[in-house]
Amino acid sequence: MPYFKRNYSVGMNIAYMFAVRCLSCNKIKGDMTMTKKTKWLVVLLGVVLVVLVGCYGKEDNSAGSPTGGNSIDKESTTDGDEAVGQELHLVAGGDLATMSSLGSVDALAVTAMNSVFEGLYRIGPENTPVPGMAESYETSEDGTVYTFKLRQDAVWSNGTPVTAHDFEYAWKRAINPETQAIYSYLMLDIKNAASVQKEGDPLYGKVDEIGVKALNDYTLEVQLNAPLPYFLSLTTYAPFFPLNKEFTEAQGDQYALEAANMIYNGPFVMESWQHGQGWTFVKNENYWDKDSVKLTKITQKIVKDTATAVNLYEAGEIDTAELSSEYVAQYKDSPEFSTFLKPNTYFIRMNHENKILSNKNIRKAIDMAWDKQGFADVILQDGSIPAYFLVPLGLSTDEKGVDFREGNGDMNKTNVELAKEAWATGLKELGVDQVKLEFLTYDRAESKKAAEFIKNQLETNLKGLELTINMQPNKQKLALEGAVDYDLDYGGWGPDYQDPMTYIELFESTAYYNQSHYKNEEVDALIKKAKTTSDVSERWKLMQQAEKIMMDDVAFAPTFQKGISRLTKPYVKNLYEHPFSADISYKWVEIVK
Image 1 (cartoon, rainbow, N blue to C red):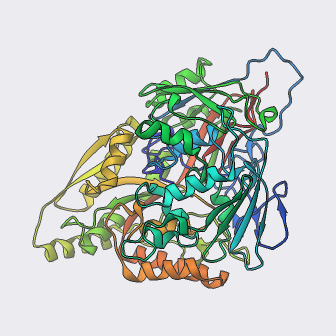
Image 2: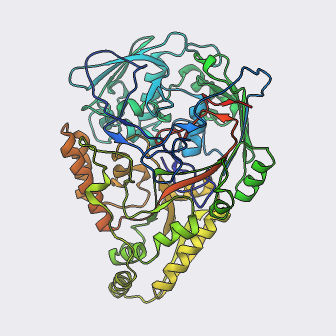
Image 3: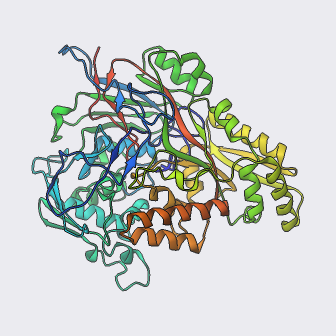
């Protein structure tokens, strides 16, 4: 997911820097094996030998800690006082880019959709898939066929039953090249999905050949090309949400543009959406699990400035606020303060079709010529750590419990002298002595501060370089990224699912979120092989090889792994942050005063 990925391109929802909210994290360690026996969704499900960094928990708030809780004040201590208002007040760094599950969803939009829609599964308090529209599932002996049994008490907000046909329609619509979702690449492991999207293939456009079928109103069969250890976690993510065909097609091109152009099957419904100002959710009384939903209303207003957000928090007008560096020292001793490391990597994209940036030595110089440690310690001050990698620390472990990062360790560490040598060589190869580049980022004070630090470091250490900072609102920045209309672009990513592939596939040549024109046939081949092998150990090695080649190519310039510092009112209970899929869940939140 882009950090206002979703584009994470770092953006808006987090209170600091160019970072938008993108997956924060709780800790979980699990091993999800596929079997032909029925698996009931009440069982805790792990995902591919993963260990996620702890976060948002009262058990351990230290940044980078390997342990942690699931929420802020996880346990509710309500004394039965029915008079307490169950309303949550929030701010967001920007507007929702879309509410369509087929759209270019960023982290903020995914979290919003997770509140009003629900897939076969949703992410639970322990960061494992828990019952959503499905009650149970079975897998074939070889792990390639899933059969989901849907609950029969789930309805849309207009009273229409939610059925297996809604999932078949939505998934095929997402894959169909005529209506293709940007995130449909996450569905290409479904049988024939890739062929249906590939022009020239005999199956191109033949959506009926896709391995998704409603066997009856409440049974959905999904056929995969090969066993996919993290498939269940994918079903929690926005592109896998259902769509009611009759309602969706009746709305036409107006679907999901306004609150009134949608129907909902999640814990809340969107009551209002004032573009550029904010939005409001209210409890969905038709939701199958409404008894678990305590909040009656969620109000989220757009506030781009951290100082304003902090003032609103102090005034009691909002219930949580993320902090930028200048506020950490002020609040670090407060019992309402917490900090934690998220499995999100931020990086500078480079347009590989730009004449200057097509030169590897120029890219290498830009990557290695500035102080990333100082940036994290002095500018961010929020528990972030410098990144010399793509796949973040604490995302995943192999079958022996070894973190993915152990394989390649740190690469391309800051080295100003080597950067200067590479810069001089690159200028000579290009036949120039002056370089002007534009640096795209978000229109926030924190973003400007961070971009100016990088600009100053690079211009100081790389003679002849001139950087112009281009600050844009979220929607405009996403559009520029999608068109690769930039030179350098500050962005980032948070995991869509609990596996290194969520990062590795970003720079596959045909991946939508590549958004930099980077192409390496060896990387593509490694990714393809990793996606099709059933050998878990071999798969791990293939992904590490791909990461190493991308770093050697300087396909991008990693900057930091995101830490979060925030304030949360003590009466907010069961606010669960997640390391993949939606950033946060409001389903279980309760106000206890």
